[in-house]
Amino acid sequence: MAMTEPSPARAPRGAPLTLRLNGREATFEADPQTTLLDLLRDRAGLTGTKKGCDRGQCGACTVLVNRRRTLSCLALAHAHAGDDVVTIEGLADGDRLHPVQAAFVAHDAFQCGYCTPGQILSAVGVLAEGRAQTDDEIREAMSGNICRCGAYPNIVAAIAAARGAA
Amino acid sequence: MRTFEFVAASSSADARALAAAGGARFYAGGTTLVDLMKADVERPWRVVDISRLPLASIEVRGDVVRIGALARNSDVAYDDAIASRFPVVSEALLSGASGQIRNAATVGGNLLQRTRCAYFRDTRWRCNKREPGSGCDALDGFNRGHAILGGSDACIATYPGDLAVALTALDARVEVEGDGGTRAVPVDAFFLQPADRPDRENVLAPGELVTAVEIDADPLFARSHYLKVRDRASFEFALASVACAVRLDGTRIAAARLALGGIATVPWRARDAEAALVGAKADDETFARAAEAALAGARARTHNAYKVELAKRAIVRALHWVCGGAA
Image (cartoon, rainbow over all chains, first blue to last red):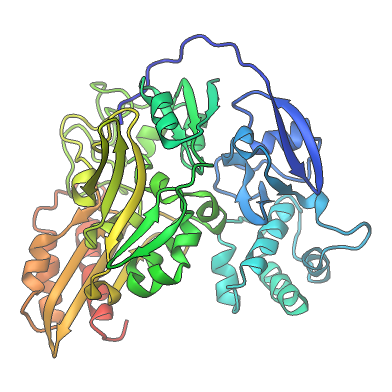
């Protein structure tokens, strides 16, 4: 692939974009370079999804897109028009925590909490994938979520418990 | 990120027309393109969204398995037709990136991820790949992760993918759609060594689109394996990796395929090593001889000489495993 020519001068132009966000249709006007992460945080006001590295290395921005865990920082928002997106704000059923949320609380699976929304969404995705049967498999499946506090043992315990409860 | 024009393609022909002018990029999973755009390394003036095109199916057609270019890495890895016929492909995919990234990344995008190193990713350094003719700061820099095979004085960046290494061992073909129709390019011929043009990484012309990968369901491939050695157990690039397949006739090796990753500028087919294996007894002495043959042309730099021995040991271990010995 040849290197690209410098881009011709083009004004960034917002274009309408509709997706299903935590169960509701939501429409935004967003520039082409808006990532799904920035759309969620800056446009939808859903700041539960965290911007850690913003380069796909830490997992803090993990959300569910069409029920599968993915990194919102590496996704262009406009490529997800019409998709079903679930963030940490959409996981509980009213005041009733999602089983994975409840398990994280019960097992003290966090310290500072910054990585926690991504950890939880990733864990929900892992359990839906149904392949993490052992603790080692949970660790491997969760390797895309970094916790700088090092809460890993309790995170693994919480996911194992949520798997049993599901 | 610089701004650009975002267009969703309605068909593969539409996608090719939108990208024909050059300087445009296809968007499938976005995982590597968006990262490099944030780093200001990729600067497309137009991004063509192909993610909705109907190119994601995995089909068994007689003795050939066809994987659509937009099939997600995770879907391919867990597909029964793939896992049973080509374990090396499943293992390579599952050793790559993280669960989240495998859910987004596609087979076509995976093949087309840039061959890259830290100097390529950081615009403060000289890089012939990023800016042809500017020089290479990796040659005398921190080159612990760099290639020992297939490099040139212009570039020693390592091809970072796992899937293509497995596909190279299996003689897979990349289906490319262009203005003149569709052609099948052997994976081995698809990637280009840097020579004096490291900015060119494959044979695609602007506007050409990868639409599928085809693998012959050779019974040989059912006994295959991918071994990846890296700095941590998961979510890390290879320092050395081995894709291999064997057919045994008693204690002798009747057929063998071997490809290497993490140590070369392209997915590296080790044909000399294969020649050393075929007809020989399946023991560690033979494996060591094959490993010597595979690395005979290695050229190490200041910080990556360890890769020569690491790759040899990885080859012996992978062959030992695939021939039925204890890992």
